Length: 240
Image 1 (cartoon, rainbow, N blue to C red):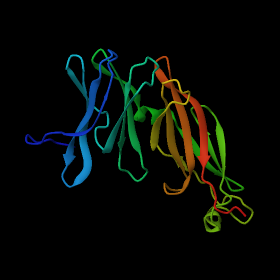
Image 2 (image 1 turned 135 degrees about the vertical axis):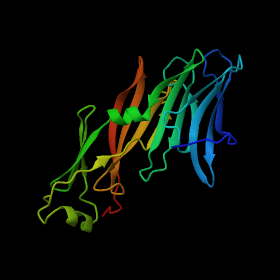
Image 3 (image 1 turned 135 degrees about the horizontal axis):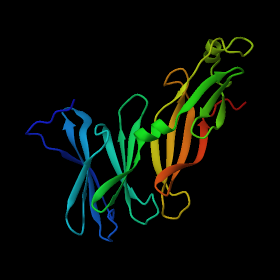
């Protein structure tokens, strides 16, 4: 558990300037955090917004308020022509996992539009090794099935999993990591940003990477919904 001391003060981590209140006046958006001695790890990461017109300040501690190298991006994700606040924080784990949040800021109160923890709960997958050097990835959210061909992997890798006929020696399941990257992209060139989400597909262990699930989310009415979904795979250097 994190405990602050009376003589410890938060540090400014990063900031941005933009109209997040929608009144046509630039506002000041910044993140602060308590730093850890001899470590880049940050505690109690807090979002502050200072209204450029009134000078009033509002703050909110991020749902997962610890991590590394927080970043800010301001852009319109909902189509109301008011900038929202997009925050990314590295967790520092071996899987390269990030926490992501998007806030709207109207009526001097923060509204959480996107929380990566809820996304990770919603978008679940089943990864199953199949005979004949295939791995299936089933997206439970939309029922789509993807097949990854792993026949070009090192023979020693394949020999651990398959017999001489290409059949599985035993059942094997893999997994899909939580969000490892999320990016603001204006796919339609209309000034409204969508979300491009990356989740690593892993085989028997986390370093056994098979590819990425890439989901594109767009704002509809009151939430982000899935638009496009693809699975990207790694190429092979053997082109002969």
